[in-house]
Length: 447
Image 1 (cartoon, one colour):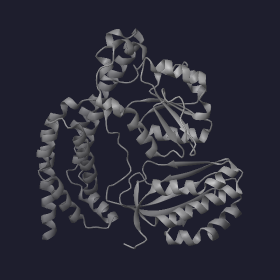
Image 2 (tube, rainbow, N blue to C red):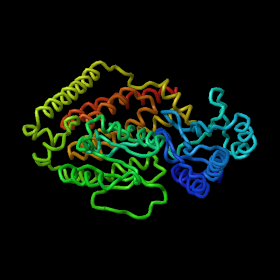
Image 3 (tube, rainbow, N blue to C red):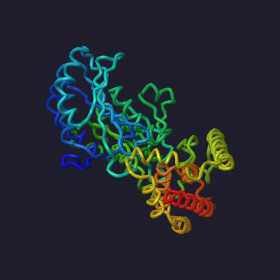
């Protein structure tokens, strides 16, 4: 590995670029918005210094020549970032002429782009866009960005998002929706929903739009239900006010990492305290749309409307679980798809046999460990085990094991953890079949 090719955090690079552009952003009153696909790994290998310089050049050029007051830098990558993939960096709708953009790309960026082995993407339909692709490698095989919320208490939340910029709102909405959250954006949408704050779990509002009257209303709601109130600030945020009703602060530029950390911080106390809410609070908080076991146990005091909504959701949940069971019966996936595994190994640049041996080293007798953590009800360890199993099974082409890991993960989503002990026996069977297939394949390679 070259000395300049090091492991780096893409979030750190983007933040350093944001800060370096502070003067021109303030002078021209430009809002810089990052839109980062959750498929982009957090840790990459490459030349972070050259990347930082190149992105600064791109954004400075746009800031200096465009009259836009909101500039969005979008980062995207293939959904399955296996080992080395091209990351797309794009600034859309710059309102600059095609000639000016092409001239900048071919003269201003050429040197740094060459150092990164990057390429320019020309858009015929959108000639004013600036679009480049740069290849990067993962820090470690399988170490992808995919954020997984660490506890079920964080799932199924509803968010009200209010901010002055539509582009900022769209960016943050997309980040919340990655976690399958239900998001309402803007006051108009809030009014369509009945102007009722009690239906939301999280309220995110830009600080300059937070009026005294609104905060008084929030304080009243918080007396009866745990509404999380989050203020969205510019990067120069310093001082807090009315700290009694605020749950957290979100600082621009907002990135997927920010939303993940925000959700964890908002609900980490509820992980520690899983006690059932009082019936009085359950009646006031209309949470029928979301399945909550604690609410379910006290359903007799809900209104008829809440009851009906909750029954519908429970039926939907049972239907989904029925679908999972039926799928389990029907699935006859290959134990070991060597063709898929060979393709993955080729993309990674290592021998397939080496990956198979790595799986044997990591998971031989792992059925004993899986049974142990299930018996101990060690939820976090079970989740971590399933994540690693799913990752390694996918790499080597272990299709039936991949399906197994996926089914176990669904138990967390549909709150069926009481059935986990059944899966310890199933895992033993699947693991035995897979290890047998791996050993047969490795033996055939020696002949």
